[in-house]
Length: 77
Image (cartoon, rainbow, N blue to C red; front, side):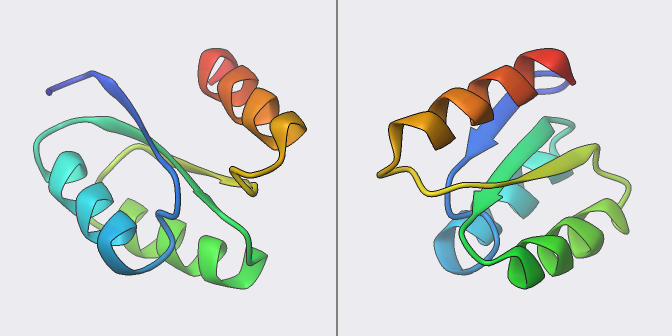
């Protein structure tokens, strides 16, 4: 998965965060989402501190507009 872009919803905690750390440790570039900005920012900082290229997108996957925003951000970055 080196240099591949991985989008992880719910990446600011729990299983999502564990997956982000796993993929990041293998060289993937990450876009993680979370509903709570504070938790998302904390997770992005923690993951980036490990040398992983990661961006955060505050989003709720149950909201169609948020999903579009997430994809657009991944493509742009």
